[in-house]
Amino acid sequence: MSARARTHAAGTAPALTPIPERLLLGAGPSPVPRSVLDALAEPTIGHLDPVFVQVMEETAALLRTAFDTANPATLPLSTTGSGGMDALVVNFIEPGDRVVCGVNGLFGERMADALTRAGAELVRVEAPWGRALAVEDLLAAAEPGLRAMVVIHGETSTGVCQPLDGLAAACREREALLLVDCVTSLSGQPLSIDGDGVDAAFSGTQKCLNCPPGLSPFTAGPRALERLGARAQPPRSWYLDLSLVGAYWVGPTDPDAAPRPRTYHHTAPVNLIYGLREALRLVVEEGLAARWRRHRRAHEALRQALGVFGFERLAPAEEALAPLLALRVPDGLDEADLRARLLREHGIEVSGGLGPLAGQIWRIGVMGVGARPDPQRRLVQALADELGGGAGEALSALQAGWEQ
Image (tube, rainbow, N blue to C red):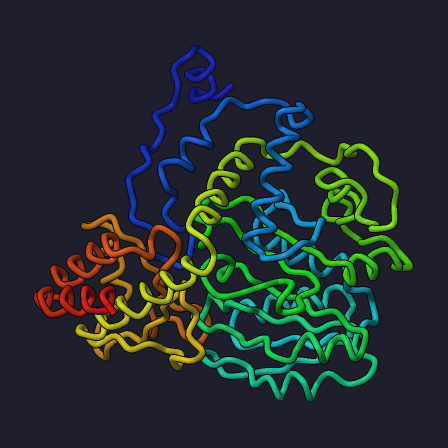
């Protein structure tokens, strides 16, 4: 036995690193409200306890409101947003399926990779990083024989929102599914699963929902479930098989099946579900339309304020994703050093660029409680302190933006 092992065996606990307070204004995770933290600390009960079953039902109902859908198969998967992406692919894509995938950033690239690994016949529709895909290009690629179209509604690597206009109709004409990544857009950007004709979508809890990472909100409509039920082979992932996990959360996923009790699938992360339920309650309490308006106002106010320091938005105004402000860094600025100083000296986290935009842009979260004046004032003041001036003008621009 090593000396370290003997020390621990004798009952002397190792020193653990204390967790600092941070203002999370990066690309995620986002700030977690006190009421959500309190919910996480509620007593852990069994995942089959009747009280927890009621918690599950309440969480699923709140999640349907956030997605703006009536889909019974709406639930939080016990995985991160990346696991939600895998679930979308493994459930609804089979080898040989012809799939159109929009690629205009890192998460479009990841989706394309996941589709290729699933054996799809991939048709890439591309746009430069920082621009939305032309809807006409997506429609042109939707030829007969299409099985699915997949787009990233909120591209976290670039701060771009993808228009969905006309995509659902084109997919339905070809008996194809419209599948959507809304990790960064859910509850912060206008999106209606039913109104936009989305057949299945996934998200993450650590963005606009202001919940810790670890769950992936997921929804699937009747056309997607029909596709799942008609598969020649079951999904390659047992854990992410919606017909199995769905039976635990909402009963049978087959809309024609007779009602039956929930079927045990896995041990749900009980306390994370508590936190998500409270986070969703806050969303519903505010109202989706009001929440969308607030995120847009917060985005524009912060854009105006940071423009005083020479930062310029990457995406055109009509393509900008409200919850994620991607800004070109002023020439000559050591962006990595400045981000490090913001974290070290002020406890504020912002994110740098990814892929070809590394070192060129900042990605600033405008998510949930982070999309409010106080945290934005703190960021603006900290930047002014580090850059040696400009606080008055920038704070005035921020205030003017919030008053518009």
